[in-house]
Length: 72
Image 1 (tube, helix red, strand yellow):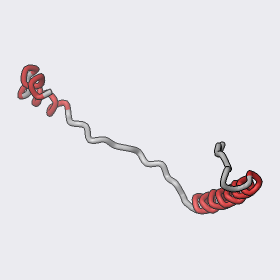
Image 2 (cartoon, helix red, strand yellow):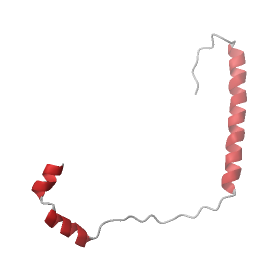
Image 3 (cartoon, rainbow, N blue to C red):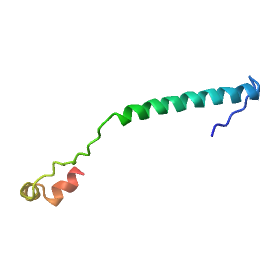
Image 4 (cartoon, helix red, strand yellow):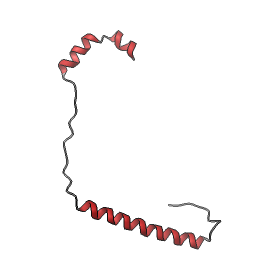
């Protein structure tokens, strides 16, 4: 939806401009879809680097609640 007040040009000219613009947008979308259709998209598993429980336990002995509160 486009809202505007066409005081500089006649409303009919503005409507023609929107129609022309929409045709160009449609063509751009069509070309993008053609490009995407050529791709082979293979899902990948996302892995994260979580610290081990051993490391977490070690840090809990080093960073006490008092130290943590002071840091935050």
